[in-house]
Image (cartoon, rainbow, N blue to C red; front, side, top):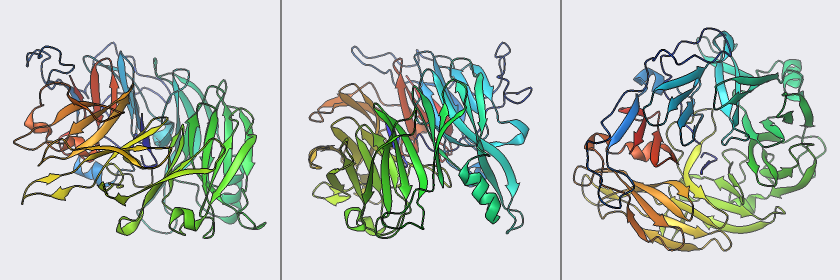
Length: 470
């Protein structure tokens, strides 16, 4: 999985030109529509013996326009199955046939609304999306923002809206109305087998996965040792044993991490992380990267950030410093995240974290970097690996006991996918390099791998909004 905290999958990308007849009605794909186009024939390159990928581009979605890229709020999400690929931006969630790119369905928010958050993974074949109406700012003329206050559960196979829920009765909404504040512009969602868990500023809410009814609500999480001030719920992820929430608090204890039962909201533990542990006393800019195990991203200016790893009881297990003998880790968000949830170039398994170092200049036109794998138990590097003396690389996806990485590409060494062992970094190319038109596109993409296809999604790239590598 690719993780965020950033990190995703995310970046807002151009919506396809499908027609939605009315709110929450999935489009019937019996009549093909625009959007994805063929990027090359599957037989353009003869697949090398033993190669997993053939070096051919499959179908692709055009890049967002410059205006759309400038106004984006971040890619919301993408999901892949052996037969389909689904992606969501702020205007629509759409499904494409994995092999051909043929549109299968598309769903838009009602009344010209915008999506403003998604669950990073699916549960029971469904994902949760937040949405709201776009309104003009009462303070700055001509500036608009989304009032994010509703949730919809979408069946990935059919595009059907299973249910929708309004959060207008939550403490966050009632408190905002009471003091004349605007509603949150985004919300973080985690979907489990029992409930959709929502991190929603003053409230954390659990919605029934069956019908969207509010099962529980945690209100006004108090700052540690302060009976007056409240923390703000900012992030949520689903784990194997429940849901994990991140809240921002005060300067002494900038963030709190909580584990809850998604069905009841019962708190299993709360861990307040101190400014000393974070290396910073600011509550802002901290995000969950993963829930199994729990990893928190703490990006900082001047390259002094870190990743914190917590155990199953919330105790600090290890710290991975941004800088070390391995170089300086790249902790920038992928693409444009704006008010949305950022994603990072980080992949997490039960015992390993894989990321990449920042690029360093080799010649006037060429940079290089390394992939680095860390042992989560100790925070120590397990291995480092470069994909070329004048090339840069990004981790793409975890697949079993391996990591798939992409060389971002130069004219001499075009983009190429590699499969490396998580244990020691050994491995090699999955197939031949791809066309030079894809140079540097992999640097700002989110990835999914399914059915022998590698899916790339971006909203910052000027060439493609999404593309399939075969």
